[in-house]
Amino acid sequence: MASNQQVKLLGVKGSPFVARAEIALKLKGVQYEFIHESLSNKSDLLLKNNPVHKKVPVLLHNDKPVCESLVIVEYIDEAWTGSTILPSDPYHRAQARFWSKFVDDKVFPAVFKAATNPNEKEREQGGEELRESLKILENELKGKFFNGDSIGLVDIAALFIAFWLPIIQEAVGLDLYNSEKYPKLDKWGQEIMNHHVVKEVLPDRDPLLAFFKGRFRSNTPSK
Amino acid sequence: MATQEVVLLDSRCSMFAMRARIALAEKGIEYEGKEQNLADKGPELLQMNPIHKKVPVLVHNGKPICESLIIVQYIDEVWKDQGNPLLPSDPYDRAQARFWADFVDKKVADASSKVWTKKGEELEAGKKDFIAALKQLEEVLGDKPYFGGEVFGYVDLVLIPFYSWFYAYETCGSFKTEEHCPKFIEWAKRCMQRETVAKSLPDPKEVYEIVLILRKRFGVD
Image (cartoon, rainbow over all chains, first blue to last red; front, side):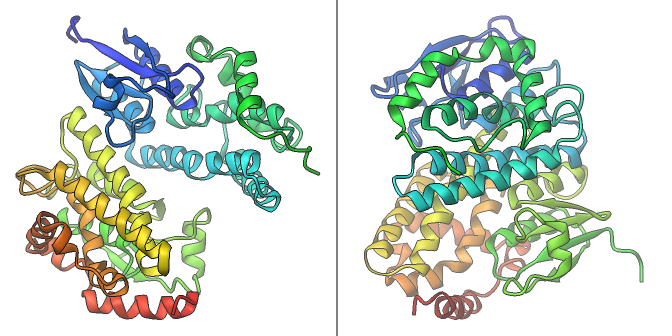
């Protein structure tokens, strides 16, 4: 591996998607420069390197951009040797991709619907969808991590549930996800947030809570 | 009868199932295709894809793989020493291929469904987004014969199934894609000359008949 490889990560520290890329880089022991973006005032660098979506994270590897968090994580896994993030067996790789896509397609939209939709019925619907998705993940979790004994793609993708979801719940007054209803997920959450690499990457809780309180409407706690 | 190792839970007009069919054909894999009734989903589909209950599902030695892009990558990885490679070998090129496949699913699929399921303003908005997505893809294609470069590849495979629905979109939406995106149509016709694609896509008129039935069912017409 060339020692003059230049790796930059365009991101914001509170973003769960940016965190995915950072965790992957750190798991591989890749040195990188974190470039702080302002989402209300996007830099030319960001707009030039992600003209299609104009979003973070963007990975720049020797100035060549890779966009979309799960694409970035797979790229990091393939471009650098070291601990593997995806399993090596094709069937298990397919399962890892399936479950990380499930988090993106089902969990995220449900959380935002439940937390931010101006219509009460829609918020309740979002809550239902979230409960259903979390139940499915609770059943899917068989070991210490979704990836077995070490963290992998699904754990990295689902970290949102462990760290961000409780903060969002607190910000808007929801209690859809808790240790009583989802004991396995809760235990997994503790494990992954204690992981030495994940700990380094997770942002501070209080500023994030203040951010969500400011951004999202406050709802009365759901029944 | 020999035990079937590879089964595809399929639906003739599903552009997502078409992706799996093309991939299997590119690799020269023999499989049993089982046409599903999506209006009355059978026990095998519900058992093999309990989460989404959708096609396609690839069942390989009894184990299900769901989600079309995941299925295509699985096929490419399992049968990597057989047939034509689907994804590029270089990690950076693979990342670009995955990015654009994701773009197709986010931008083309959504907008195109509006074109045949909506009316009035929503339809017009869908048309606008659909054309914009195709124009973006034309830019990416540039002067290359395929998105994969000189050779038909992953992004081509992921995108071409939508072409079988163009007649339906254009008829429902009263527009001609060729007028807005001639290069796109050129690329599509080039792909259709490929045997694996031609035999995997249904006749556009067949798709249109299905669309008319669905429009009645959804109360659009």
